[in-house]
Length: 357
Image (cartoon, rainbow, N blue to C red; front, side, top):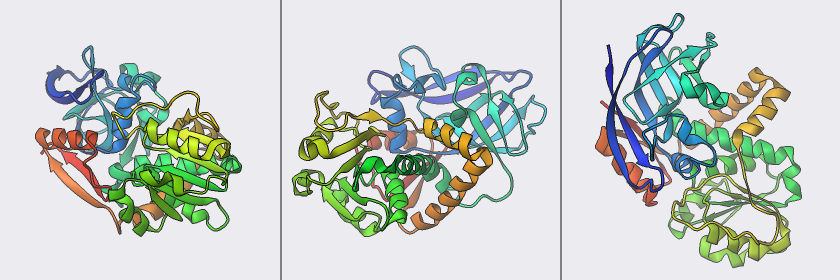
């Protein structure tokens, strides 16, 4: 028997254009049907759209030609199972489409998790097709889809910087300092002080006070005040904004004192890309799974998971003092916040969690 699935799709060339579509699907032997319970929508998901072709995000949950499904992180519950080892009623956490349901093909099932190897997802990195089997009450249940995927990236950048001795820099300059991944990185770097490099944040004037009050940054300046920074300090730049004009201004200010320049996110959708002839280190893109793979090989999967969980639990406790999770229900609420996010109208102190009922 087929079931109806409602899905949120975006126009790939112009992802400000969106629509809801309905399709029918069937659950075959070895598969399960998961009803999506709740998911988070963050600026990180906008990065998935911006880098959809470059990093292959559109292939995770394919849509009709010219359209794409932006992946999100969240919880789902198995409502139909034809897979031995995954019972109906089981709750799972992982990578999902913005949709009412998802057909999955669990394989490599353990007590803790499984891989979804349904069709094209068989080729994905395990970061994106591994699902946690939820047992009992989970701490930080609402915060987890809002912050944990972002914090995992923050944790990996922090570790990558330390692994490379911060590229010899005396300060880390974070662009889009109020972004949730930027805040997670600043939190990790702040924990290394005073031994680690200074942490400096660049943000909009409207978010400057919020960023300063967190205490994660040693110094915070507005985008228009880049010239007030000491250009003689060896600097590593971590760019979460993807605004070519801002990045170019930073490079021209510090010149050859930029020892590393890494782009992580693209939260400013319509901003121009940076020119190719910038002084200092050539900007490059950070792909978190590469560092995860390296550390998993060095520490073992259990060792990596333990370090990440300890760090995440500490950050979740700390973030509870400044973040408010807003709950939205239904298609209109999802579409509205998506549009607000594209337009930069989201309060950095808010997280957005959605369900369909």
